Image 1 (cartoon, rainbow, N blue to C red):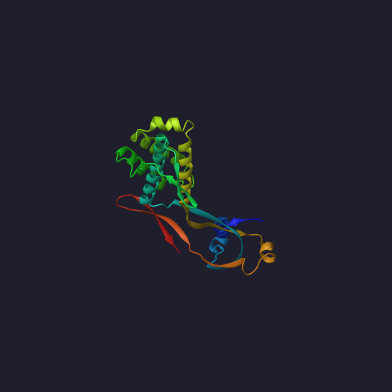
Image 2 (image 1 turned 135 degrees about the horizontal axis):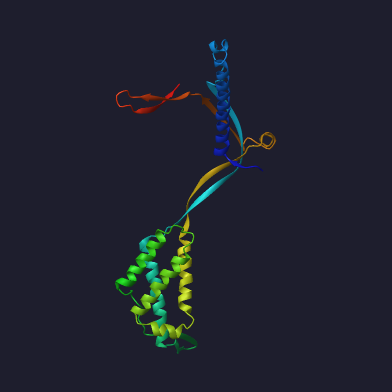
Length: 266
């Protein structure tokens, strides 16, 4: 199926009408030159084709449309910072718990005739907050700004990897757990796991916020418009073209000698 944008289709029709007028005017000019050389014809007016008004009715078969979508990162800054801090705190907690080497132990309490197994919780206080060091907090701020101003929000992977690496390393160093982390994660397992989780969270908050039509596509083939159309697929463009004569002449200022070009409409 032949397809063209509606703007190109209608614009082409109008330009063809303009070309027709141009051809007619050039032919009138040629006739004027012939008349000027004839003693009798030079007293006659030169025939000239003119369209004071033209009405057009153009049936248009809709064949499709082109759309564009606007993708945006929609997570609020406060929510983002809370999530990142929670995620890195959990990672720090994991390293500390593994470092303690404490395993869950069980005691058996006999209540005749029922046995109840009750786990003994390790006496390790969870991390209540992150370090207030400016470096890591500024990195988290920059992390959000980079995502919020990303020119292509649908491709955040590079930003996520770079900035999460910085946050992860800075926090581990601040808590003096770098050597312990290396022992526990010789293949960077914890980092890779958290990176995947952070990436999934950010991508889930990157959504289509706007969809707009870029072009309306039409089929200009007249036989298709006649035989392959329905009331829902065809609409009619009613256009009226009014002719205006445009003249460009030069006017010379007698005092200054400056020549100006003036455009006049018929």
